Length: 77
Image 1 (cartoon, helix red, strand yellow):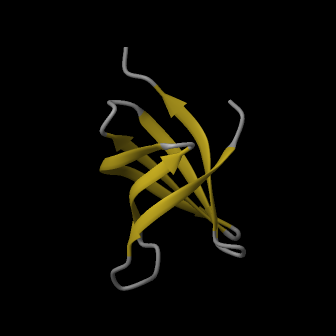
Image 2 (tube, helix red, strand yellow):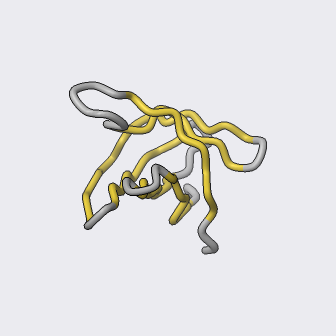
């Protein structure tokens, strides 16, 4: 899958950008129903989320430049 830059609205609790609440790809906004997993790399935070369209996504936050990227999309069968 080609990687796409996305706009993300986040929840900020004890730290900034703690978890995504929604993300926009092109002109469509997807609401995050559940954050299924998260992990960290050097300079990155990854989130595996289920969205209101029934699909699962992995999105990556580049912490150095505060950019978000859609890495993977998986459709329900």
